[in-house]
Length: 150
Image 1: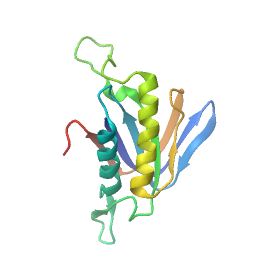
Image 2: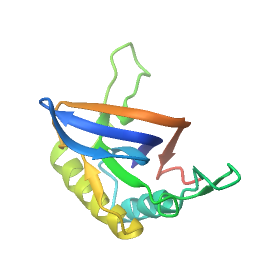
Image 3: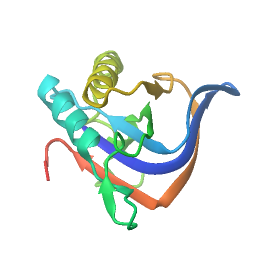
Image 4: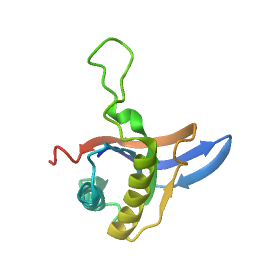
């Protein structure tokens, strides 16, 4: 599992011109899945994101997590995070999970993230052509891969 997490002052996702998920200050999480991903990957990532201290404290130091900051969460499935550009100029997404598996993994991830944070997670529409709007705060953008836990 791979995510790109962005600290935002606001974010929303639209499908067909309609807003399907929207948050104020919090985290926008772009998530991708591989065929080999299992419940342990989802649990590890959910816990990591719940504890990730990237919100400023009173001294301006990144010392608070999304829960401490009373932030919100927006998760968007994005298989293109597994793009490989090793050969040629056209990306390959052969590492990305098949859509039916990825959809189940994404739903499970959202549920685990809600459980880990105690927050409701807004989300996009799996497989839809989405427009994601965000105001990156900082900017703070971090990529995390469950196969390379750091």
